[in-house]
Length: 325
Image 1 (cartoon, rainbow, N blue to C red):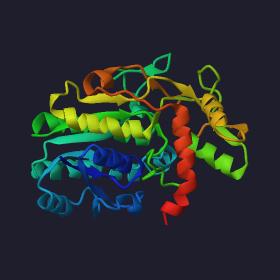
Image 2 (image 1 turned 135 degrees about the vertical axis):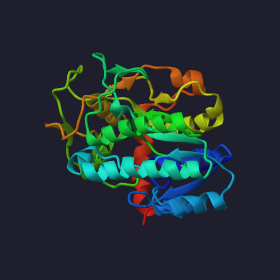
Image 3 (image 1 turned 90 degrees about the horizontal axis):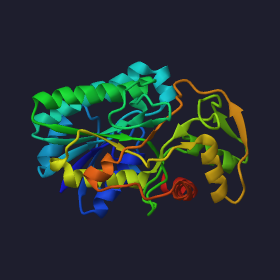
């Protein structure tokens, strides 16, 4: 099998490409390299360009006529940036995705997996969600994902393409073989900021301590990026027989930011201290999934612990600068 991965030079897309290779599936990468890294495409079929570039999509399918599916990972993903630049986010995440799907249909592609987000949910009082939970996206970024899901559902209802949305929770870690990892040296998510504080020898800032959780900090479902990647392989292998168009990908366990700090300090040789700070624009309390739909339909469960995700993130952080020139 050959699969086109948009955004395949990014953190998640490149890890999915590695999981595909390990499973005997050949990835074809399309990435603009706005945030992706050329180094993550080495040894892989790679096209540099925009997902909205129709002639480029045509060329990819002409030169790779055996592409059987597309995994659409290309997107802008930083919540505070989406608050500051909603037009840019809607253009990149919605308008360009619409163009992409139009070009896929024209080239006879009938299967697409969409990288969606659990940030579109309205969490229950216990902070859990299932695929049936109400949607209530709280940031422009999250709304672009919800808009795309609705747009894709309408398109799939009237065109010869099926689109499966995989709603990601919060990826951490790196490829256990250290082929790829988080490309940003100064990432905006909690674990990235924690590693930065550890490396710099300064306290970690907990942004938001008044949330309605056990310890007042936000709660997330931290899933190892390799588990996330292997779920896509399972989805590719079972695509035609799936009974759902939306599947959550998480661990089924909620972890607060303070609990993440505790897990981090169990792994490192010197603990990080914490200071409290206000929540950032677009921040939400968070949620975790309590559904077993992914296990039932994909035969998949998350297998890596938070501590393993932290260890792999730390290992990648020591290698990143030598791997990414």
